[in-house]
Image 1 (tube, chains in turn green, blue):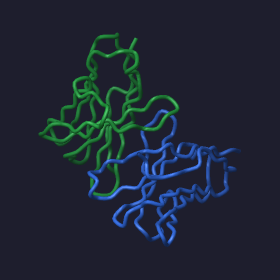
Image 2: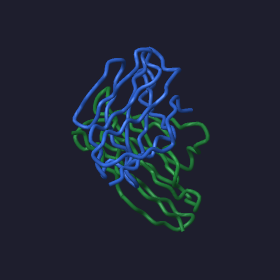
Image 3: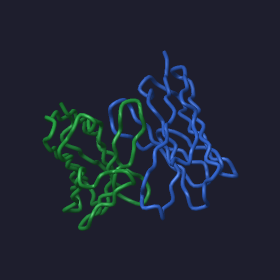
Length: 114
Length: 111
């Protein structure tokens, strides 16, 4: 079945630094990938749509300069949290679809900013 | 905003069927009903989806009412490993693939 790999699974960074999260589709190509954020005890919130070869589309209220998205190939999208602060600590999840039906999610990245 | 309404939580005895309801009264004709679940600290897992006919796969059955305003996900023989948050989502193919998650139903399967 379709697999989406996310790396790292956990990361701790210092306040003010940047951290990059990778999302790879392992056995299919994805022109579009999606990034979500999830705070404890809450649902997933869509942050942005990552488009291969073009700019990402951000949801309302998401700072595009803070959450940089790059989709340089058909199998890789990256999310960089710039100048991270403790309030950016969250569970970040990506997804992609191998066909027009189902969407496969990565296992998520737990970001802790100290 | 999510277009679905689900109970916040439900309990089910191990080995019994778990029936999870979802209301989607404003669903459009071209929108599918998707079900995903999320086990704690993992990414969501696809379960099943349907348009208007009932669907069944190795994980679950999806029953959609004739007017399509509600549906029920059925886990025929719930196990402890089915304890998770279950999300019902409606989405059309012309909506760019954006899955908008509501609050979901927290299902607890008890021995």
